Image (cartoon, rainbow, N blue to C red; front, side, top):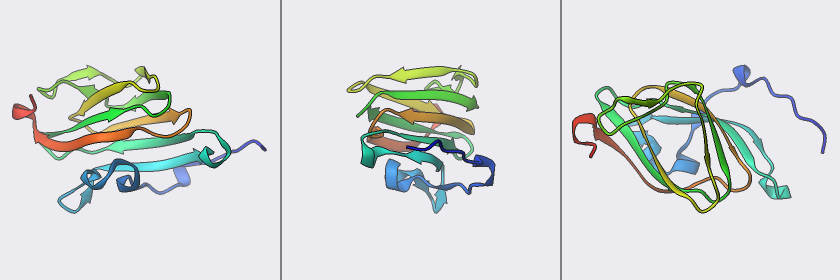
Length: 136
């Protein structure tokens, strides 16, 4: 396979509904958007994307998922939060969810990350928008 070069700044953000399900759209607005950088799953490879989460004011996006392949997450802006909406890990953080690992994320501020899967992307077990005060 030849090398790939992509100018991600020239790409449009697209709806993440095909990967995250209908909850990626809240009240008619895409709150999870993607820029798919590469998708080599047809040839036995993985998929890489930039993801942007934009939770509604006063709310957080609560995701529960299972890793279907090793998942590498590089936080570029914003970051994961706690149930109370406080920052738990900010930009510059890195996480690895190995294949089969159940995991979750709570996102209360606009967040962007580079996510690289060794194979198939996560199975989204649940995703919801909840009030920060009642996220527990």
